[in-house]
Image (cartoon, rainbow over all chains, first blue to last red; front, side, top):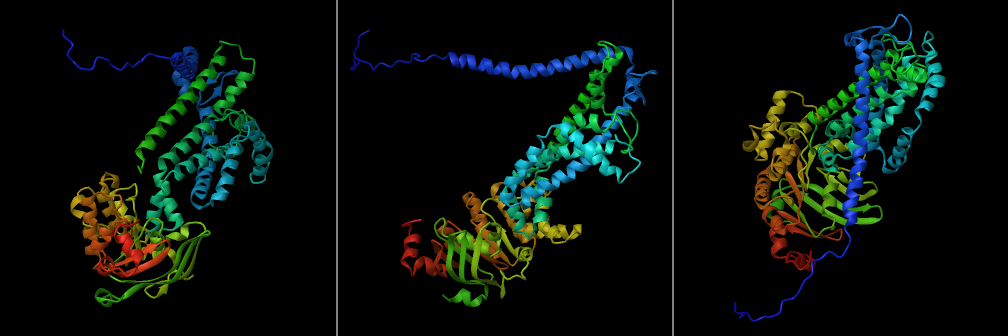
Length: 309
Length: 259
């Protein structure tokens, strides 16, 4: 072909790689491994729990476990009904929530709607420090301070009881409720508050009828998270609530929670592989299922009541 | 400054020697102004000139900003609204406000309108229904939403949301309606609708609007006030101010030499 086009030279450009891209190949692999590790650990825990639980149910009928009203796996005559542990756990958790949700919510409303910026800046970190106190300290607080205090009101009360443990678990989860709820309320846009103020709403009306509904899904999540945390709490109940599996709703009696039972068995000399040893996995599985269901419930409630802004 | 419209309409708001400080910042300097009832008064001026601040002194929304200090007189219907026996919530009920960004509550259309009346003690369903319908009709939104009252207010367009906010303000039966750049976030057609609405509403309400848009002030207001650096430079009948401004700075601003 004749070359009749005028320019005979073309400007040359080079698109070759001049840098090493090794890091771009290795870094994602390392990051992936880190992410995979936590997922694998979770799977591992569930598999262990599940296999041990299945083993356990080979020797104890499932229905006896779920609906039995007597829990005595270590002492003859043996009985494997989880209801006493379940009732003990729920008793403590409900008391804890009765304490923590109203107080936590009220302090969140105060911090987000009333407190001057300066006060909030000081109080919020302090509240969050409360969440860092070791739970064993709370346990001794319950046993040596709250219980004697309650005894002066209810003289018949035992040294170990559900009420004292429940109240202190509640105190422990207040920061969680207030901090997460406050985050949710602070995220509500200022413009919504101004809209309500401009209609003649008072501060309290704005907080209650605008901010709380708009932040409701966050508030519910914080409450459910606190509930799960209370159910799983171990040290306080092991120290202050007693070790008496007791099917009761009387908060003045000594009870045993699921977590405290697991501690009791783990610390003892129960032989591996025995039915007694299997109980802690069955109880652990029950705890896991409850918190799992709660989380699903929380997500459903949060979505159902979400007010978009 | 007294011409035909003003003579016909009585003064409702009276501002005398008003100074306002945010901390050490002197935001309003010695403002003197009278605002007639059942007319549209527009505040114009460049950003930061104090026009929105002055607007917010009229329903005391500035009270919520820490460090605000106010001197001078703001009287409305013969009462000093900063005197200690004035209930701020009652004042705000009578002086409604519409904001720059539409800010409907995350509730249904119905509940948005009913929020104010419920706040002030109206519980009867039939009464609330009546107020919701009337307010939406006044804001010329009723025909567009009457079949969807239970839907979220966020399903509406920006312009509809702003008319919803106007309806929400009207639902508590105010005497004065403050509009703080109420159309600046809206498209031209929605803006036009709101301007037409303002013309309707001024028969019943005293309207004070802040606007960045000089054409809007010229089109919709009866009286215009020009602010610069916290000072009131000029106020007059809108026609006079735009055709024959008496202050050089006003002339420079309205002819687009700055701002």
